[in-house]
Length: 178
Image (cartoon, rainbow, N blue to C red; front, side, top):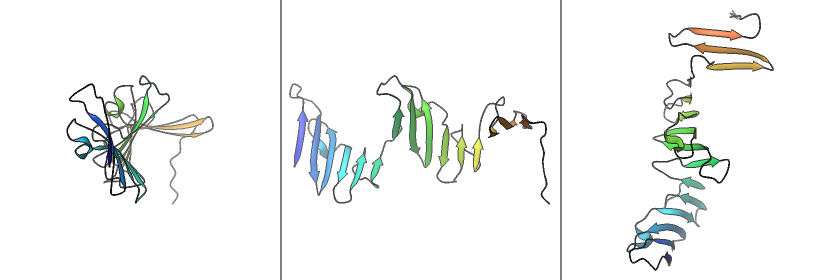
């Protein structure tokens, strides 16, 4: 069974279709002649497995979101398209968490967090982490900051590769436990 919603004023109109096939509910768009049989499902609900797919007709988990060129999940602070967003995206086994402008999404900003699923590397401020924990920040800011209340210690690496340890206290100690 299939239900199609069509703008009858247009001879070549596309359709929104709703169909059931083997206990799976598909909600999709289609061309004027093909209906839901040739388009990617916008929403799939599999009544047998209890899985839901957005952008896929074969959901793998309870909720599967698929997109090839944009974030799979966007969190925004309002319903306005002019708001900034936090975006989550999986691309080639890399998980990206980034902020973005109202129009760029996660494609033009440096991710706040990147997880490389192949190597297990975590990157902060980089899209390509090169070690287990890779932190990239401007040389004028600490790449790692430790706090205990108002007491702060920072680690900096400058463009020459020099490491600087700064602290709000009087002493910086390197201790050998042996």
